[in-house]
Figure (spheres, rainbow over the protein chains, first blue to last red):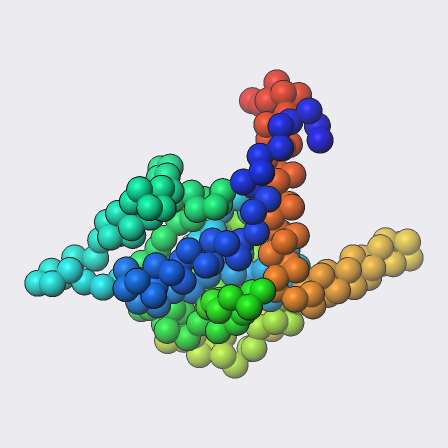
Length: 188
Length: 52
């Protein structure tokens, strides 16, 4: 294969990562979680290449603290029993760089709370709704986010009424209109 | 737009619909394969030589 040594870790299925995250949840390190980003979008769309996995999650507050910290996750995953490595903002779990993202605003919190439960090879997991993935992509507003929105709109995976309500609740309607102006009539 | 191009776009859309309709676990396996290819291409010396 192009003269490049095959890294066995790379081909480990994502379901192995989900098992680790579920165990972390069962052990009480995190409360709820949902897959977002490109992997989350793959639940609704055709698969597209991505190098990492975005996991949005809610954390337990340390007693007497209002601060949210990812430290318990890092401590849990890098403990000798598990031995996963931290690389920049990722923890590499079963060969996959995983980014843990606590919600930074009401939209993120809602996306987490309303995530869709599913199963991958019998393993229970949660994925953000298509409408929340679109709203979050719109809010981020990078070129790849706009490309993903266009994919969602073209696929018919988005319920127009539900998206409208989310965009309205989180004051994103003006941004959506700007998106429509740029990319044509894309509202589903 | 030529008929050939229209046909091509129609087939492309149909393929995307077929892929979208696959089970999530199947799509995740495809995603892993795509990632492996992306990493292999990025690591190829030819590609690295042409990097700006």
